[in-house]
Amino acid sequence: MIFDPFSMVVAIVAISVGAGVVNNWMKLKSATKRNVDQDREMEAMKADMAKLADRVRVLEKLAVDADRQLSAEISKLR
Image (cartoon, one colour):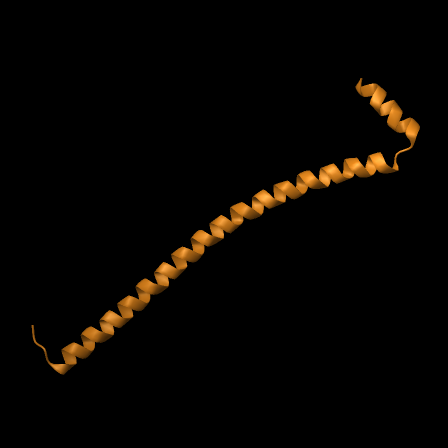
């Protein structure tokens, strides 16, 4: 191996570029993993929101329903 200044400069540049590529690849991989985890959490939250919306609809119906209609529906369920 020849240790002239040109070879050393080429080696330093190659190592620097290689380290930059590896660094960017690791950041991208980490960001992708976070996005997948965030997507899972978002889907779970959407499912919870849908369940809560259904519950609110039922509660609103009960709150604004006339007594006789509510009594009739309760009687049907028995």
